[in-house]
Length: 287
Image 1 (cartoon, rainbow, N blue to C red):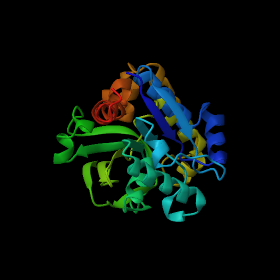
Image 2: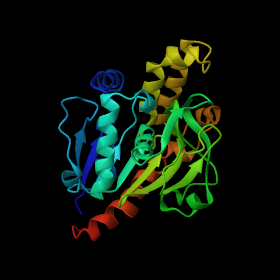
Image 3: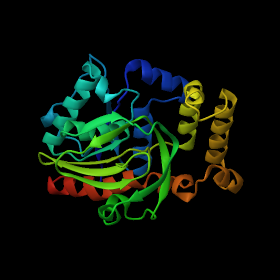
């Protein structure tokens, strides 16, 4: 069954090109590549609403997609501005279209804010590398997004902001010490949104590229003693990407199959397709 997806890039043109220089793709291009690997016959299109000249679909056009995916971003919602406003407007149109949507990190924040929630700079500070001890709520343990996750798990993460208050129609599915809302489902004006504060779409290589790119900032914030330490950390991530069987490195960084096994790391996305996209497509008579 062919599925048509829209991947919404959260970054500005400058930030997209910076990520491309360090990793080889933009966030949205990497997300689209993952979706086509996970879903046979999937067709992905990319939208860049942070760009002033972006041509964006309205709710009618969005109804032509089977699923919408929102990437991370270096933007901050509370800074406002046209690049932020256009993304909120697009997400409101996604809700109105009835097309199921999934968001990672910034994507969760946009999904929440567009429905009436609030986003703030995390008073507990940045979460980087891996979100630790993510614990599903009672609702999360029964929700298909997290059905096979253990009682506590790790996931790739890079964020400074968090959802502070959730909109009406939200079910919080998981949280941890640094981010009480690590996963949520939002139902708003007939639309369905699943979001996570972490990055199930990130490979360890992509995470390594981000750590290297912001190594000086992370050193200033106390995550590493020096930039060389950040680069060594990134090198370990690349080694684990190439050889997940390196138990010494997995032990050193406190990660297991929930991160090292690509199928488990990306499971929330695959479950979204199976439990939200496919049923919605069938209900619309497109099966």
